[in-house]
Picture: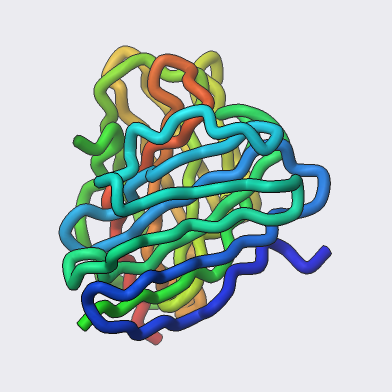
Amino acid sequence: DAGVIQSPRHEVTEMGQEVTLRCKPISGHDYLFWYRQTMMRGLELLIYFNNNVPIDDSGMPEDRFSAKMPNASFSTLKIQPSEPRDSAVYFCASSFARGSSPLHFGNGTRLTVT
Amino acid sequence: SQQGEEDPQALSIQEGENATMNCSYKTSINNLQWYRQNSGRGLVHLILIRSNEREKHSGRLRVTLDTSKKSSSLLITASRAADTASYFCATDPGGSEKLVFGKGTKLTVNP
């Protein structure tokens, strides 16, 4: 089992550019979560999916953020246009079931917007 | 706002000593989980304790849960330099499907 795979590991972009982060969850996991981690705010849940359907996107900070899960093995988080305050580490995590099941995290994408 | 708040924010101990980290939360939960994060890596699940459990052990880890005080503690016994990491508690507020994390305790174990 390769675990949750995120790409790219690092992304440096200029303000105003579009950024796409990618995630491949563990096969068989029904839930997929996108988190953002910063020193100031800690780990924030942005959005989560159940069986490829977005369930709660209340953590998405603005309309500039969007996420999709076209199939059970792939999800994207897109920021358009990006801003310097979006700089953070973005994590994808997957799990078998709801809150009683451990989350398996990828190693994150470190995004720097200049 | 964060559901879970860890205390202390940072802890530095010598190898062989025990490390205790605390977590407080605000609303009712079904489960509480503890995770470890090494620098530059994703979080790794350590242990889950259900709301009807008071204590749980896993190797050198001991977790307690006091639902009346809405608090939990993680004890790492006989710490090693490899235990150096940040530790987070996570809860499912109101039994929801999503996990909410605290800001973590940064543990440094000096050899």
